[in-house]
Length: 135
Image (cartoon, rainbow, N blue to C red):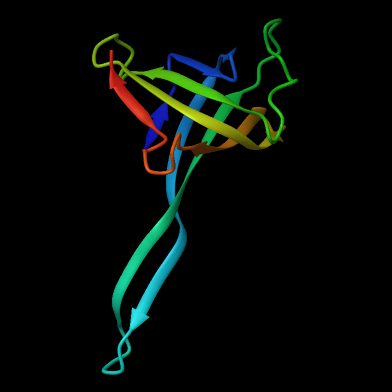
């Protein structure tokens, strides 16, 4: 999933502005592949464990409300964002997830940016850690 320019983003109870994008990647954490003796191709594959990674890209401005302190790796809390397919308030959606901060990186090129990488955690190991609801 990719969300461009979400209208509101809250991470660990702090509001963030100037968000360029939020991407959600679903990755295999453990993969099982079996082969038969009859040929070179797999006859069975399963992904019993998966991981949900989230990446937040934020433009860094020099405004008075721009904080560079940011979250720290290992911190855990809630991520909430509100987005819509265009600048109107139609078809708005709210995404919520419990997350752990993996890394915070800065790119100080021509347009300075901060990238916050998260891993989403499930409340019980069986429930999808991402909740997307219509507003």
